[in-house]
Length: 273
Image (cartoon, rainbow, N blue to C red; front, side):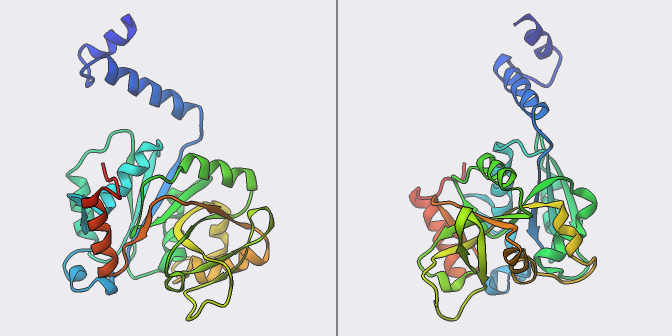
């Protein structure tokens, strides 16, 4: 306790509990590799117009804060060291907002797109900032009980190129479907089918753990889709796995989706604190 009190005196820590929390987090970080996340923020948000004419989709408010801020706070709970915001459309609003706010224990960096590069092109553009296994998530998805520690452990145990979080939804035809095979392998992807021709109801949740090895398959400066161009190839190679999640999840890609998420916050179905 004497050592803790010495840290409190004359430091940024206000009391013993705050100092103890800092030391625990510091110790946990030293016991594991650095953890990085890429949030894909460069989309135009066309289905949310007119809301996105003046506001980028990640900055639309939910529960009194931008959706992107909610995602960052969620990642902080799992001790991410570095969060990379892959920005494009109206990126100056995102940079200005987060430059005015301090987030302890996590470093926010930016990867700017001069033109839309899609999901694969965006992570390739951020390659210089990536190492090991890293999380990638779309900036328009919301969840409140996805265990990211278990997700990373799952990915490590499978030793694949990619792990895709899968959820079940009422309207699977709006999303990319995934066929699950033995040992949690994803055997096929069907991107937004016009009609359901399979018994599967698992859909791509827009959250992935990726190995940096995947970047070798993406040409720099090219518009490349992970979902349409990369994942189907990995499925044929049996190198992509599905991590199933049954908690709250929602896409915020359309006005009706956005209204639903805001309503869920008000009714307590979605926790944003």
